[in-house]
Image 1 (tube, rainbow, N blue to C red):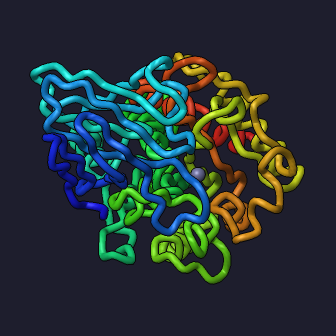
Image 2: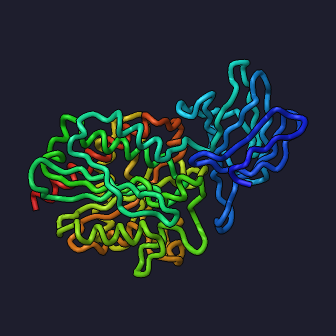
Image 3: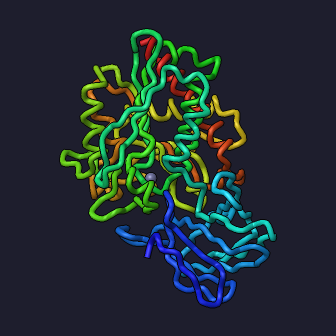
Length: 386
Ligand SMILES: [Zn+2]
């Protein structure tokens, strides 16, 4: 049962998921071995998100066994000892497809483990409170979620009358937390990078960090939700409050100046195509040319340790990116292409753990976000010349 602590009679270990982002099913605990599985809830088929806290660990070696599906990244699970703030990857040789173990020191009384590095409202608050030069950023409530939570909307207004507007969202799939560290990098860069003055002077940003707000806080998979997930809900009859309200808000806010709409995602857990950062191609020749241009700009500006190659763009009609994948409904980026006067709409996929052999961290994800902010500036400057 989610949210309940599970004690085995012969073990001091206690596993819980009653915190924001928590997700685990404990099958059994025997001595220092725990049998677990991710909690799929209303997900159609398999997905891999899980996140739990374990206490009573002091001085023990604990064995964690999942069921038969892959639930670890190439660098294993992410973990945080004694607090849930400083996350690391357990490492490439730390695990099999379904098992890992951890030896806790005497001081390690509790720990958090997860498929990836989590990000919930608490992280957003911490980021915003430490952010510098945020006078022009304000947080409002887009709407209330199905469960009554406030869905945050961030607005960054320029010094002058806005020449262009840009829309950025994340967590249309609840479990894709790494996207928010990328978003932090974008926000920080807009406000603080000396060379991005153009954005501060001319461009207004609207951002929604958690589209599937309940899924993020409840620790849902979010992806492939039944009857459809948030990123298939952008058609005419949206079932989710956040999607309906975003479309309405954009309608009044855009004023024909909204030029770019970007949706931040994370891909599947493993495999070559999921272990690179890439832009997902939209339908249509003109849009795909613009996406290539944007992707080229990201590559040109990417000076961080995570590699980015524009050639990793997955054009529409290839790989998984085909009509079949969108049979359930319209995605954010598809809807984005229909906004009056929009120039460019896309999805960026950012891996959970591994970018072409480089381990993803909060910091290098933020640095990549900075490259995206530069690419946005250059893309908009290109429109100036038209
Ligand atoms: Zn996604």
